[in-house]
Length: 143
Image 1 (cartoon, one colour):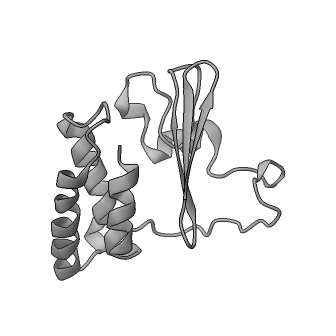
Image 2 (tube, rainbow, N blue to C red):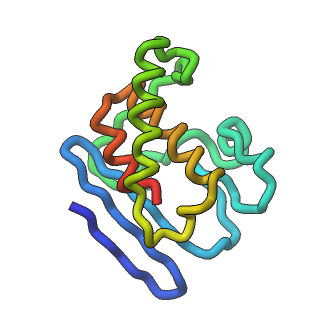
């Protein structure tokens, strides 16, 4: 259920196909780019969601969609870990902390504590708001 794609010029993609969604991980050299993960200029202060939206907008236009149907995003409050109940947050942190032991050994970022903490934080958010099954997916995708 994982598709690996190697493109010329050091571009690599993995497509993770799950039961009700898919995730894509893309690795590529830094070039003139901007998007959901920022602009890769080395300045984390301009990678906040509000900065990215200001530069490129908040969603893909209907004509550029991958699929034939269009569901516009619903404006409103974005959930943060402050919205997760204390009991659920504790359980999510424990579940996601345990994924460190299972992370792939052949990944270049394995020893990077900042990367590890970012993966765990994303995992906790996923588990709090989407369910425990996403902890396993984060373990696979994190690296």
